[in-house]
Image (cartoon, rainbow, N blue to C red; front, side, top):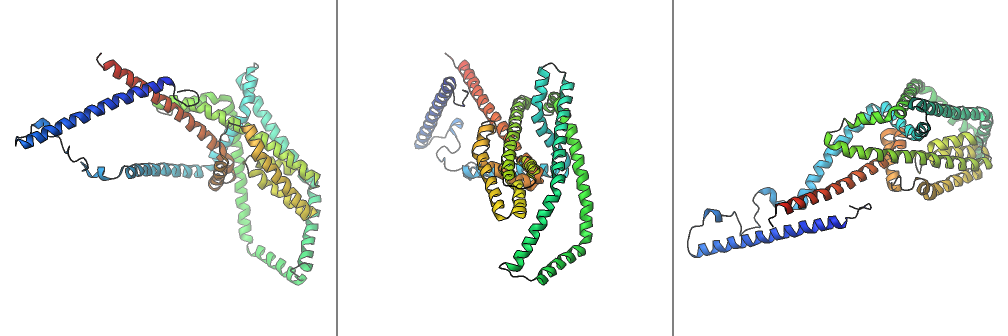
Length: 434
């Protein structure tokens, strides 16, 4: 098999040899069957009993099946075999999803650790190549990553606290403008009607105070889960970048011995795809956030820097993440500066998304992550339904790694079939008398 998947001249010659031998055997079988039929007819004309060796079951009536299963059309039998196997696969996936749903904190934390490790592992490799011990290289990379994340969080909090009063004033002004539009606009509402609506809203809030309180307690539980997941993700990240090779060797021993060679070859290729995806996505997210941030800053929208950071995080969901998180800038522009500014912010978001989809994704990710946009949208949708925001983030890298693994195993299977055909041909040639 050549590098591009086409058969070589050697494999074609082997296939031609096997095909010619099968054709000769088929002709010999047909000649033997014809001889048997002629002998049967001669014996019937002479009223002679048939020898035991000539009592071939139904050679003259090939249309009648020997058992009821053979009466089923071949295409229907293949469809039935395929369907029940697919049902078993779907049942297995359902059980897997239920397990992941039950242990969602552990699963999402470990997947997040894999993504972060794929981003940090090249740095660890570079430090080890320059003479640092493995433990020191992993510790420096891990601490540097934590410091970077902490600085980004502090900067976002500082920007929000600095501009909070300004945004609050703009929001109050915007509410006053909305009230003025409701009274003097096409709806012609009176102040009494607006006050009645506000009173009903306050009453609804008071009636559902118990639910709001319970929501507060559930929010505390969610915060505890998030902190647990962050700690677990950080713990797993350090040991993945420090001892990833030994962990992979232990995982290989869990597979049957006959499948270890194939899994050992598919694993590094899937990891390379994951590394390329994470690094490319970080670069694309950075370009998106800077471009949109500069655009909304020039339009005078407040909190441009925190919104840019939020867009950077949202861009980890391909094609739709930056657009969804960018709607916050549209809402702030609508409240603070009016409809025209909000429309211009939306135009900036759409323009950056078009550049990402048609230029950045193909140019930066390239052939390392070969996933069609339809597959991206479908995987993000399914991931968000199954696992929420975390599922949407991990859906595309999961599909990309699966695609790489399946492609490698398929190519390996084709190569194995060529080798098997060559061995069969060589064995048959060795047994054929000269």
